[in-house]
Amino acid sequence: MTAGFTKGRSKYYLYYQCTKEKGRSYKGEEIHEKVDQLLDHLSFSNEQVSKIAQYADEELSKAVGYRAKSLKSKETEFRELNTKIERLEYKMINDEIEASTYKVWFAKLNAQKAVLENEIIALRKGKKTVFDSLDEAIPLMTNLKNLYHGVSLEGKQLLLKTGFELGLTYNGGVLRTAMINPALIDNYMRIKDFGLLEMEQPDYFLTNSYSCTA
Image 1 (tube, rainbow, N blue to C red):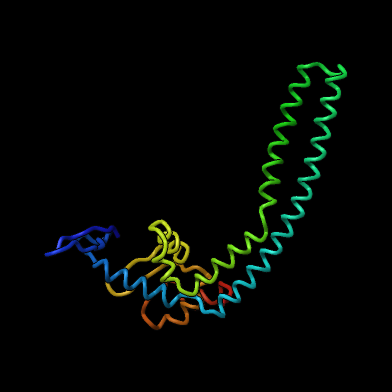
Image 2: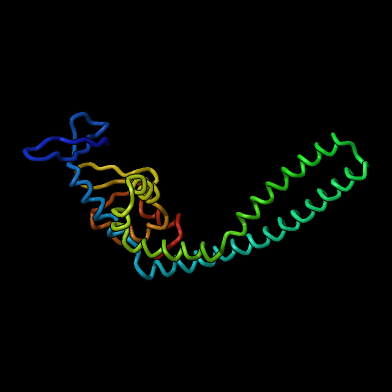
């Protein structure tokens, strides 16, 4: 669908024009209300958020442990590289190598050093900062509608794309999607009889293919 505006008596009204059927259009307020209702009902419960937070914390801790090992390895490489540069300079000072040879190897080793420095800086980024960001982000999932209205247009598009990777369509009565984010399947199964969203995949495919967040 494409968005547009039509002029009423005192103001302009948003509408969406179907790109497949010429002349078919829907009121913007109608579709926005449907999306709001859907996001409101798909929001995670406090119990689900706690479960997700625990799992994310465990997985992030594993990742942080891996980063610590990588950092130690990179710091060892950095020290060894500095030693090589010092030896190269020693040979240059004592006329053991030509100036041209020194320049070639110094440039090569210095480039490697710069790469390692950037990698070490990235790996040293605080573990606490990552966990704090996680703690701030996860609770927002308890109210997807408020989250949707609190972000920019690009944020809204990203949120809907994350939840419904192949997009949402509207037939004048109900929203439809071909694929829903696996994390939302349990919530969809709980509200599917509300008539807020129709899925193209059968229920048994959904429940058998994805993990549970209930």
